[in-house]
Image (cartoon, rainbow, N blue to C red; front, side, top):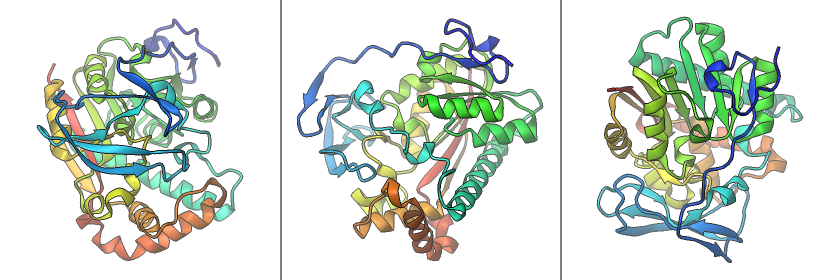
Amino acid sequence: METIAPAARAIEALEPGAYRAPLREAPRREGTFYSLAHGEEQERTLCPLCGSDAERLVFEVADTMFHRLGEYRLVECEHCSMRYLNPRPTMEALARHYPDDYLCYTNFDDGHWLLRWAFNRLQQDQARRRVRQIEKATGRLAVGTRVLDVGCGRGEFMARLKRERRCRCTGIDINQEVLERVHGELGIGVVHGTLAQAACPTASFDLIAMTEYLEHELRPRDVIEEAQRVVKPGGYLAIEVPDITGPPGRWFGDHWWQLDAPRHVTFFSPQTLTLMLQDCGFEVLRVKRYGLLMSVGYSLLQAMGFHYFGSNKLAYLTLSAVLGLPSLPLLPLLPDFMMVVARSRR
């Protein structure tokens, strides 16, 4: 089996198990400056939905996961109510906020057996739920469906589609180490970088999935427009993001776990995400809002002053589960995530 594919090779030529080298990063946007308070380069931005520069400050939020310097301004557009960080780290600076022990890249192989079991169960349940939610809009995915998973992480979603639906999957992510693991253990083709850097051929995929990804993108509209180009006519785009307008987002405020500044830079509501998709040529088929047990627990811990540390993952995740357990019967009433499935009108 081929291990490394040349960087110039088109993604359509990648067979399952092939690996593609990283491409050059996109040029930096104008308006950058060095923030002494954060120790990094940042950029000022306009509203990612309507392009307005009219904004109001919602609150300032710190990095509660890795406790790095400074606080970030969460603002709301006065024209369309889109919420986003402004200013925010540049693309180069943002990459340094994703260390190897970032939760989405962690596999807990070296952790306690109970932690490994619980986290694996959680990830499998999450992948199963995502497939179910997508197929409620698309129908059962046919054998051979070409799927692109943008921000694929450890690849559980692709592994389930490959195993249960025999889909042809390709993953994109910015973490090279986790991609090598996906490639080596799952035999799935992967590309290092972003969707824009992947330079996929036009109309090459039946389904593009972005689960817990779009909130990390500095230019989400550009990403959706690129997805419109890459998906086949009548093909599907499935996006899962935190819902900042749900009860947990409103109640916990700057303690809401899913703020995760500065890794999350854009914060959607069902309305703002629907508008962005429609503006980019998609027809929204289904919007499903839901709550997650662990997310409620995480937010409660943060409100109590306890924050995530890499050295005590077992204690932190256990406490989160215990605190979130009483909310289990109420999760349908406590949505802080949403899955939106849309179809290309092209």
